[in-house]
Length: 153
Image (cartoon, rainbow, N blue to C red; front, side, top):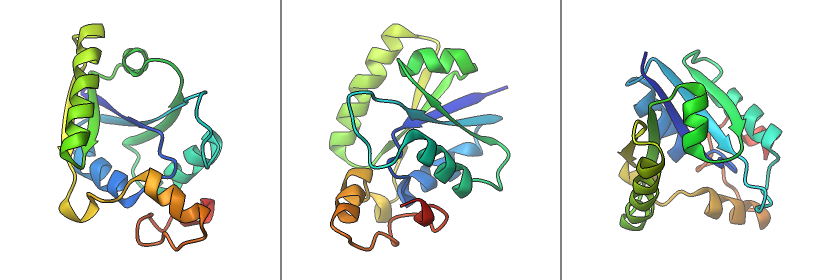
């Protein structure tokens, strides 16, 4: 059974994230969306809100499992039996950053493979960071967020 993890903060989940999931899930038998808990960051949404939001977005796909985790992502991959880690790439700077992380992860866990999925052009400018800023200033984020996620914002 091929198992993958798509890790991130998902604070909040965006249409770009959803696109990466939909394009990746077909490649695997079991697919986890892992919400990484970063104790040094104060998020817009609680971990529980993020879990509920993501479950609402993917409630009709039983292959997708949503779970929060702490610690090293490669250790979490091992704990759930994921041999693949999915990462979305929007820009060249994303690639450089993700490549460095993938190389470090490979040193820590050579049996876990990082797979980069390139963002569709229409989603390359969408990031959770920018969406959070729009929310903080009461802007309309409906074009960037899946409709199922809007009630959580």
